[in-house]
Image (cartoon, rainbow, N blue to C red):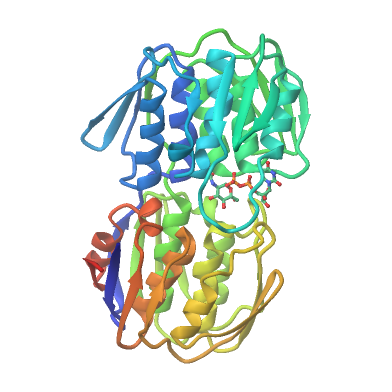
Length: 418
Ligand code: UD1
């Protein structure tokens, strides 16, 4: 197991290039199963979730070749419709393959997915949506078994705007017979990106970014070269780190509109934010001011994937805040670790009540999920003294070259083996 050793207290200065979005790249990789030609995805992030998704594609019989920062997927040789538990448990996004695999092979067998332990994370909306397209589904011994004669378009109303279910249904419907309409669809930028990609390779999808997505089935999808959008959560994490540590950084290659809910809060915190083209500059000189409340919501609301990092920031503001987590039931697991650094927080159900302290103090803490892990790292950077953040397998899932990028900004951080 690996850990970071962090000597906190350095201000952050300089610029950081934002990676392509994990949550765009994963469904686009899944979509490559549907294509007749090769798909080249440009500038993929060096993260373990992507590596695990590629492993699953290879297990299905696809060929994957890394060329520099790009990956080329050739799914012409795909022949297998089963995803074993050993692979599916590694990442939640393995479930995205259900739609493409059924579309291609008319059957699929997949173990229940893994991913961050942040709540129940059911897949009922994925399965109900697929049933509406004509898929027969049974569940046995931890496996989901699917079969169908032909996928047929239909109207699907989601009970809640699930990102994964919206994407899975888009992927199943893009080559189905007839038209599919997804109502109460998720509106995240990554869903628009999936639509752009699918249309680029020959799909007929419209409406992504709104609550209604219309997919007219096509017979074939070709290959192509595609650059996914950049990672708003990685960008947000760096901006929050700079706000906590002080200094001035520029996040480069990021659409500010995609994280406007965060930028509003950071301005309320007393940070100066300047946006120009695809660059966001943040400057924090004086003491951070608390924001009264932050509530996670589906896009365009405040993202749950920045909740932990923002709670950490609230802990070192002058004043009190209430953070409400509306999406996932157990997404406050990092809070006992923050307390070891001196945070004054109590959790009651979906709410965390934060009383700001002057500074964090270095401590030995353990990560238990991806974004909670990121919150511990940036807290350690802002803390007085030395910290250890144990178990980097979580942050490695979503942050490529995390410590290199932080070091370039002036952080004192090193990776070692336990
Ligand atoms: C995606 C993101 C994740 C982000 C989350 C919410 C990817 C790879 N992951 O996860 O980073 O935190 O969106 O923005 O894109 N739900 C059900 N039944 C289902 C599916 C979901 O009840 O079948 C519920 C979930 O329990 C949760 C809510 O819907 O309360 C939102 O989950 P969802 O949008 O599906 O999240 P993911 O797609 O898993």
